[in-house]
Image (tube, rainbow over all chains, first blue to last red):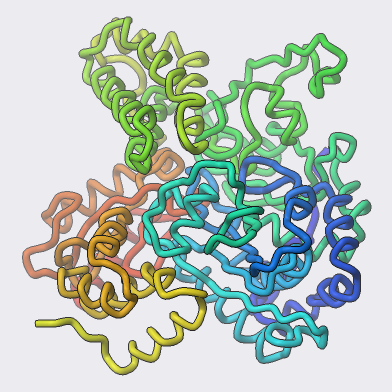
Amino acid sequence: MIKRTNLISRTYDLPNGYSLAAYESVGGYKSARKALAMSRDQVVAEVRAANIRGRGGAGFPCGVKWGFMPKNSNKPHYLIVNADEGEPGTFKDRTIMEKNPHLVIEGCIIGCYGIGAHAAYIYVRDELHLSKERLWQAIHEARKAGYLGQKPLGFDYPVEVYVHTGAGAYICGEETSLLNSLEGRRGEPRLKPPFPAQVGAFGCPSTVNNLETIAAVPLVFELGGDHFSQLSELHYLKDGGTRLFGVSGHVKNPGIFECAVGLTLRELVYDLGGGPPPGTKVLGVIPGGSSCPILRPEDVVHAPDSSSPLHPWHGKPAFDVPMGVDTYRALGTMLGTCCAIVLSDKADPVLAFHNLMRFYRHESCGQCTPCREGTGWIERILDKLIAGEATMADVDLLHEIASNIMGNTICAFGEGAAMPVLGFVQKFRPELEAYVKSKGKSGTGRLAL
Amino acid sequence: MPFALTPEREREFADILSRYPNKMAATIPVLHLCQEQNGWISDDVIAFVAQRLEVSTAHVQGVVTFYTLFNQKPVGKHTIWVCRTLSCALRGADDVLRHCEKRLGIHEGETTKDGKITLKTAECLAACGQAPMMQVDKTFHENLTLAEVDRILDNLRKS
């Protein structure tokens, strides 16, 4: 059942919805007042009860992450907000920054308090000029109103928020790479451990949260953690609240829709997205950003084991499984950022595969050999395939290279690049082999309709 | 000639430094500031940034070469980035790019002879729901049609 909500996107349709006046007209900054009157432990407990699963793709519970921050350290703590939105298909954080930036600032105030930090850095990719402008404007307005600074909202707990920009590197969305970039270095990921909660930004304890995660925080204090969590169909799986769902590609009505967690892919693609354009049908959907293995309409859930989170949908179409972190992991794909890319049957899946692999080759930071070389090999094998020069062994080679990237790199980018390869090879093997047999003359030869 | 910031940008420089616990953290924002003035990151800019932030030129060079948005050679007065990643490709990004190349008489990565426009491609610019799209300098143009692209290019040529 589609449960549309209007919490994150409350100001989206208001005139100057990004202004402080608009934000306060819908109750803005009341949550920060509530939170700052609580103890730090109470704040973390409330966020924990809300079951906010990280919105950047990994799905780690926000409250648990905050709980990792040391209690008695003599070093400063930092809150780092990840708005390096760049996962192909993902365009949700941008709408918050452009249309409801004060929600982010309020989330930063509460977040800083919850983790014992006095400074938050919002890391925005440089290309999002309007987002940066709106965030800075919100920071200046909040500072002027006395909501940031030495005594935010009258409480004796100094908080400053800054916007930091990248310079065009997808990898900086990886949290340790982002930390290096924030420190003024090349954005190469760091080995973990130590985790950011011990050694993060500037060698100090830090929490890195996705921007949408931080934007959910004020809603938790408005509704109460448990109430927020129960908005979700998957509250029982500790996957709570409401979030932004996106749909792009071959649908009639692409866009961002705020709904309770637990929406199904079918609802997102057909009901909210309007389904595929006339005369086409859905070939496959990449559910949550390009790293998530593709699902096909004919995929059926196989979960005979009653302990599987997918068991209630055993024998039913995968498209009808509620979109949650654990349900999607059990499906063999990932929820990722909840922004789906739809391919219709007019699109050539081999070209879509090639397009994404060019992306990963371009964006690999080059630090680890399996990823740096592997992404290049995969792209070149697909070049060969499309040119009609590949052999059947090359199709197997794609699988082998991807398997050798998995687990052999410092950061998760390697998996992020390898998983869609394994997905495409599994789901579109006949199409790949047809390219070999026809010497590159197969497929529709186009991506656009 | 050694590079120096304009007085207005010097104030911005001081403001940037005030945001971080150390000077090195200002490397990327300061490089953006310099590029805004100079158009690209020359050796003189690298020397300036290294000296002012008290880091080595090798460090600054390393940062410049890591991030794609730092121009390592001069570019046109305006830069166009056509997003070519999957969501845009599914809605006609290739046609937009070919059209730009044809209208400007250059290939992707090149600059028009009059030095006005550099044409580049970009990987996903977070506008997938408004595909196809291109970024012109600091502005996103979304839900593009080829007629709209023509209008944008005409305006750029006149500016």
